[in-house]
Amino acid sequence: MNNPLTHFNDQGRARMVDVSEKSVTERVATATGAILMKPATLALIQKGEIKKGDVLAVAQVAGIMGAKKTPELIPMCHPLNLTGVDICFEINSEPEPDSGLCSIDINATVKISGKTGVEMEALTAVAITALTIYDMCKAADREMVIADIGLAYKAGGKSGIFQRESSETNT
Image (cartoon, rainbow, N blue to C red; front, side, top):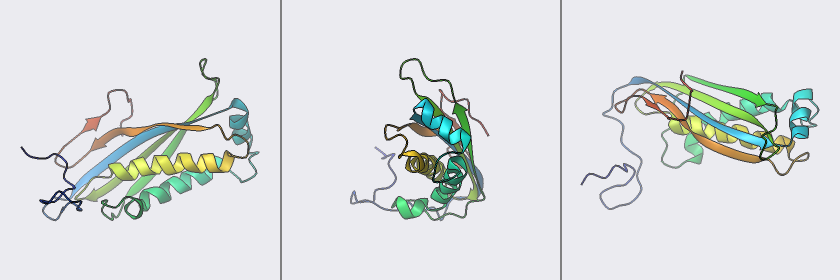
């Protein structure tokens, strides 16, 4: 039986996958996630009253940096020359009835012309964006929760298109 986990060598030890025989194709991946917070915290962000600065602007830059630094954080990721990284936010000001929390949805799209995909870069971008929001707002709200980080869409390469069923994201 062929092992679908490609990051293991014949001895069962970790390895970086050899992509030298793969074709260069246009590849894109979009990941999503959210950070949940108290309504008062979201109000501080929207009014620009967080003492550390413009939360979303800083988080957006941090997420882009995170995408670019992915191979330094995740051992088997290939160093890539990304051709684009875009991070968008959707602010949900209306508190959820169950939790009473508001949220900021994070959407990161990463592109490349290359031999391997950029799913990990998109996921890392979302995670670093959310962590940066947490860091900048933790003095106001230590109960923030980072949630639902996942791959929403990918295209390019041999495996073709993937779209998460619960996702409406497409690029």
